[in-house]
Image 1 (tube, rainbow, N blue to C red):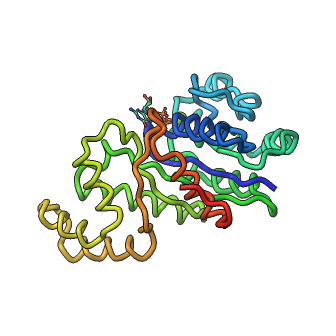
Image 2 (image 1 turned 180 degrees about the vertical axis):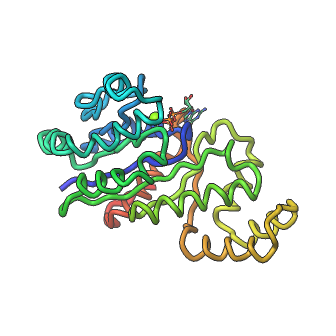
Length: 256
Ligand SMILES: Nc1nc2c(ncn2[C@@H]2O[C@H](COP(=O)(O)OP(=O)(O)OP(=O)(O)O)[C@@H](O)[C@H]2O)c(=O)[nH]1
Ligand SMILES: [Mg+2]
C-alpha cells in the first residue's frame, strides 16, 4: 500500500518545485518516497522522477502524428496515458515506496476536467492505496479578496471533479511581504474577514452573492490552518506533509 500526495494547482503555481522540495524534505527525515511525473509535456524538471510518464509518451510524436497544437497535443497525451497506465502502476509497484508524490500536468484543467484525469487518478490509487491532494494557491493570482475567492472556487471545483480530499497552501511565501502573507492567511482562516474585504473592494459581485459564495466555501473548503510555504527556502514543508498525513488518516505520526 502506498500513500499518494497529488500536487495540484493552476499553471505556474509551483507544483513541480513543491514536488522537489517536499520530496527533499521527506528524504531528509528518512521517509521512503518516490516521485511520479504525470506531466507528458514538461521539458525540464527540478528533480529526477522515479516514475515518469514521458518514458512512455512522446509529446513531440503526438504533435507531429496528429498535427496538433500545444494544448491539443497535451489533451491527446493525457488521454493516451490511460493506455499505458498499467506500465506506470507496475513501475510504482516495482519500487514499492511508502509514499508517492505526484506532480500533475502544468495545465490543471487538462488533468482535472478531461475525462481521463479522474480515471487516471482512480486507477493509480486502485483499491488499496490512499490519496490526498495539496492545492497550491499562487499569491500572485490571489492578491485581492475577489481573486482569492476565485482561486478558492477553482480548488473547490477541482476537488469536486477529482473526488479527492485536498487542502490549500499558499506557495512562494518567500516572495511575500509579511503583511501580505498575514492577510492571505487570515482570508483563508476567517471567512467573515474575507466577506468584509470583498464588500470593501467594491467587487462587481452583488453583496448577497459574495456572502453566498463565502458560505459555500466556509462549509466545504475552509481548513483550520492555511499555511504559507516556500519551495525555495523549504519553509513549512513539515506542515505540508502533516496536512497530507491527516488526510491519509495517519494521525499517530503527524508532523507539523
Ligand atoms: N521564489 C519562489 N519561486 C517559486 C516557488 N515555487 C515555484 N517557484 C517558481 O515559480 C515558477 C513556476 O514553478 P513550477 O514549479 O514550474 O510551477 P508548476 O506549477 O509546476 O508549473 P507548470 O507545470 O508549468 O504549470 C518557477 O520559476 C519556479 O522557480 C517558491 O516557493 N518560491
Ligand atoms: Mg510543473
